[in-house]
Image (tube, rainbow, N blue to C red; front, side, top):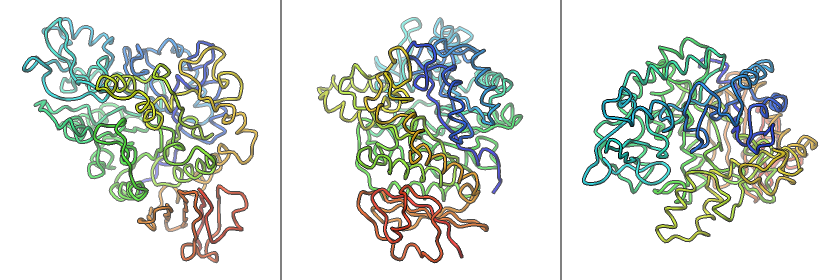
Length: 553
C-alpha cells in the first residue's frame, strides 16, 4: 500500500459559524479560529477542514455560494483568510477548503443571468425545463423537502435544485461550467490551501432523461437518480488532470449514493480522481425511507458490519475517511454512545474507534470534549433549513409538533451546530454578544476550560490516541479484521502488519463483558484504556470500557 501524508493525517472539522466569535456579533469568524490555532495544534490534529467561508446569503449556512472568490462578510475578509492560512502552516498543520460545486446560490451572478431569458449566454449553466402536465418536469424530491424543481415565471420554466430552492444545480455537461470550476480550484490552490472536501460530489453528473424515480424511498432515489451519473468519472478525471494533479494536496469526496461496490471507481489508486471519500454506510443506518426525520431502529451487528464490509471493499486499492459525526449528523456520543452517566467513558470509547480504523479519521469540533445533542423544545429555536422545511411539511400533514421535536433532538442538524463551549461563562465563552443559535444549556458542565484542567478528560484521551496513531503506523495501514461479528455488545478487531499487531476491545454497553478466550494476558499488553487502573480488570470489561492491546507473537 502506498504511504502518503494524507493517509497518516487526522482531520478536524471546523464549522466556522459556531467555532469562536471574535467581535461580539454572535457569529463565529476567521479571527476567532486564529485565536484558537494553538488549542488545535496542541490537540495533535494535522488538517483543519473549514466548512464554507465564501460569500453567501446563508440559506443553507454557506453551502449556497454567491461568490467563490470572496469571503462571507460575517467571517471577515481575504486578509483574515490569508492570516489564518499562514497561522495554520506555521504550526505545521494544513487547510482543507470545502468545495461546493454541485450547485451555487441563486444569488450567484451566473444564475442571475441564467434566469433572465432562454437565450442568455448563462442559461445552460443550470438545468432549465418546461413543466409537465401543469407541474414540474418530473417527480424528484429535494434533499430538504418538497419538489426538486422551482418554477420561474420570467421564462415560464423550472430549474433543478436537489437542495434548497436557493441552491440551483450547475450543469456540468456545459464545458464552460467545468472550466469555471477549474479556475476556482486553481485560485485557492495557488493561495496555498492543501486540498478540498468536495460537497455531494457524486451528484455532479445528471441522468439527462430526467425520468421519474421512486420517491417513497429517498435512499434509493439518491442512488438511482441523483448520484453516480453517467459522466461523473469523466468529470472528476478531467478535473484531476487539469488542476488537482499539479499540486501536493488531499481531496475528500462527500459520498451520498456511493455504495461500497462503487467506491474504488472514485478512489482507486490508478483512477486519477479523488484520494478518499466520506461514505454514509453507518450514517444512514437509522434513516427510514423518508430520510432523517423518519427514524429506524438498527442493530449493533449492522453497525459493525458497515465498517468491516467497507474496509474489505476498499482493500488496498483505495482509501476512505472515518467519521462518526459532522455538521450534517448528530453528536457522536449522543448517537453511538450515551450522553448520560457514561458520557465521558463512551466518548473516549468512540475516540478509540475513530482513531484505530483504517482510513483518515475526521474529528468534528466539540467531540474532543464530548459535546452532546441539544434538546430544543420549540421550532423557533431551530436554524437549520432542512429541519424548518421538514417541520412545516410535518405540520401541514397534520403531524404533532412535540413528536417532531423529539425526532429532531436525536436526528436534527442543529444538534451539532450549537456553539463550542470554551468555558463556563455566559454564552459558553463563544461570544460576548448573543449567539446566532442557542448555546447548549449543559455548557457549564461540559467545556474546554474544564477539560484542559482535568488530566483524565476526554480531550487528553483524544490527544493521547492521536499521538499513538502517529507513533504506530500499523494503526494507519495495518490490515483490519473484525472479531465476534455477531456479538451484540462487543466491537472487537485487530490491526496487523509485518511489524505489529493490535487488538481493540470496545464494550458498547453498560453491562460488564467477560474476556475469557478473547485476550491471553501472557501475550497482550494494554497500551491505553478509557478506565484508570484497568489492569485490575483483565478478564472483563466494565460499562463502556475501551482497551487497546499490543499483542506479542
